[in-house]
Image (cartoon, rainbow, N blue to C red):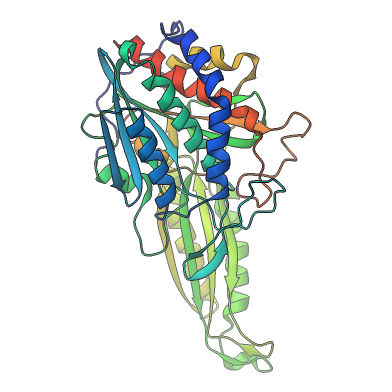
Length: 429
């Protein structure tokens, strides 16, 4: 797989609005209530990764009803890819929305709150759109309807990608953006650019956030198992204590970033989020397992962190006469907004958001939109959904059971995606 496609994306600071700009805004305003209704239905019926059967069915039916030229289903299990060919010649642009919910039990008091349950990795869990993917799907369905209504004057084609399993597929399964690419989501035809958005409680209603270059972190799964020798808790010298050793490993890992990484270049995070070991207070167990996550914004630093985490954990364990197994699984690469494409589209985002346009800080969360960006130039931006009377710094974050999205934000999302698509197509025609 090539890291980047050979497309020349010229920068521009004077990008003019498309000839369809006024009609886009009128259509978006007219569709706002319908987008909210779609979102509420999807929110009430969330589905986990690779199980988005109902959601995918709604999306596919909608695209067919709009007269899309092609509608592919079952891409990467439940993904939907639709192609809308404009009436005028031009390039191809892609728009993407993710569809899956999270294994989270909802605690938000709204009439359309999720009561859904499902099985996730062998456990029965509540299911909630705690990251706003229901908003993304509804917005992109709205953009599909807007552009389908303008197709006679649309310069080029728009590929709509509705993606499953952004929050990772179940253990033992493949899925998400990487599998969609493998199954041809970016082929026949190949887009020259791809755009996506994400709702966030870190921004207030009316704000649109963007950043050129590295924007969201890579994400890697870390599992460390310390192997000791079980013995009675009253006689620790007769065994090898993996609990004490694991504690030393956790403390040692805090130096990987703070004492080994050049944080003037890029930030990084190493977090242990779970420790499991032992069944009784007076038995020193045979082993302890630690699970964590690694985040970084530079691929070279990413590899260096992996090497240092492994070396440190093994060395500390060896010093305690314990064994150690380190397993690091690369999940998502860094989400990198193409600098030239971002510069080209900033005037569009500014026209849409006005004073609400914000240059945001790096986000240590991760996104598998990054896989699409490794194939074609991409721009991923953020829409604020925190109500005006709530401080975004104190709002419940994405992935919280109390995550709340102010639906008045959807109009900005509709307009932003439709305008960047049309402005890009006309600028490249």
